[in-house]
Length: 248
Image (cartoon, rainbow, N blue to C red; front, side):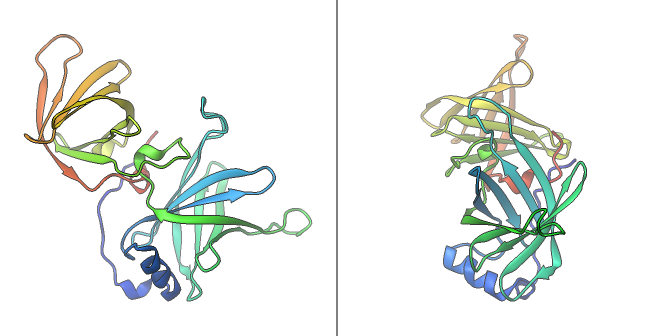
């Protein structure tokens, strides 16, 4: 699976009119991805979906049932149905699973996620879950209920794009290697002047420093050799949409 990060422009009139008004009221441009946080009933369970209306992509995620572990985590990608965007603001989409596809509908007018029922209706009626709309979730928010609000992403054009995303407040960090799509996690270990230090987990501990002033990223050699320095730049923060088609 590959990480998709390019931005593609399409005529704005192709989006449902009701959805355009909703996004404008939310302070989000129609061309920008957005996320919803929804809650199921009995048992109460939170889940998230991030939408890119222009590229017709969706990423669906559930956080762990226990914050201390990984049980209950799901990460699914899918597509928005171009024919399923009605003037009433409903957005039909489907998610890929190991056993096939799941079809859902996001109703932006009532702020609900609709899980269509299964026939006969006595087997499972349609489910309507309340949702809260907001900006696209950061790639650092994966596995966490509380979103990362102000992350920084650094892109290095070295043998294909490399991305480091970091957030000083939550101490979270992540590394992605372009088309390879693999993600490594880490933490912010400290800050000094314009420098942010990261402890990364490459399978073995690693140290990285980002100097915002000089735009130099330094990767310490774990074997005691010379450090590697890269000239990098800050770009738009990576979101969960950038994990679409990513390999895990």
